[in-house]
Amino acid sequence: MKKYGLLLLAGALTFGLAACGGAKEETTAPKQEESTGEGAAPGVEEYTITATNWDFISDKELTIKKGTKVKINLVNKEGMHTISSEGLGIEMGADKPAEFTAEKTGEYELICSTVCGATDDHESMKISLKIVD
Figure 1 (tube, rainbow, N blue to C red):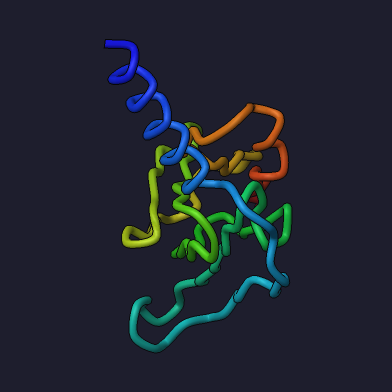
Figure 2 (tube, one colour; figure 1 turned 45 degrees about the vertical axis):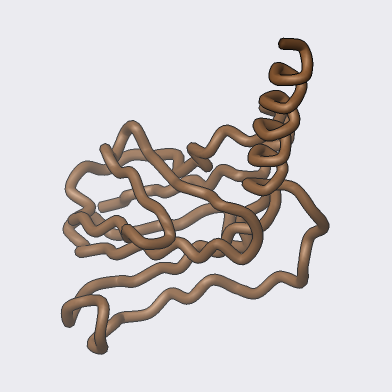
């Protein structure tokens, strides 16, 4: 019985480390573009957030004008990550971008919603999204 428990614990630990563990790689700037190509309709501002282990390789603050149509893509460069914002009501993953119209001014937080380590390890996995007039 103890062996089964240890095996289960080892499996859970391995899964957790696979989500966020490992060394950090080089960083690249996020893409922000008025997209008219595949993936976003004309007039949509498209942002890409790249996630690595315990960090988002992106600006730590996005500012969007009220009324703007937005598409946010997530690229998992290392590990498996998801992003959510309770205030905006969005949940996204690498295969599920967030698309919305910035309707209400305010400051919102985009956070990694994949639990994979100590809370302190996720402190750099937050991005402030401001919607302004």
